[in-house]
Length: 193
Image (cartoon, rainbow, N blue to C red; front, side, top):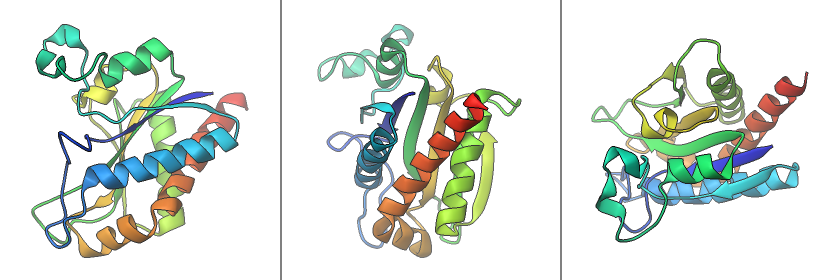
């Protein structure tokens, strides 16, 4: 299986959410977890491509403000690589400090392959980390779900704005990565059944 891994945001241009307590950056957590996911999936026999960038949508929809620093966008690269699945890794944030938990997005909740992949990953993370289960949700407006031509998910590992979740995001990055990889292999096994 060919798995395209997209750690969210960008190390240089767009940090994503930042912890108000410690300064922990979403892009750094996503980069580390994404690299580990790639390692575990390759060990399981998958072929992986990893690309971290905040340049997401196809250039054809007019998002050319990034042309000075890179070529194809994340979604174009995944489509051109002909990935079987796409996994984007993020950390959530909210004004309300009590907001916490893991949620995984698919383009639609219609029993399709994106929803199945999201469910496999969500279940593995919640089981492994005992995080609050915020469920699998639909969001057809997320660029990485809207403009990819394969089953795609966006995983929100936890809330960087919540002290308890931030502890998980700091101390358990390997556990998150293993859980995502197991979710992907669960999905692959489901396809072969």
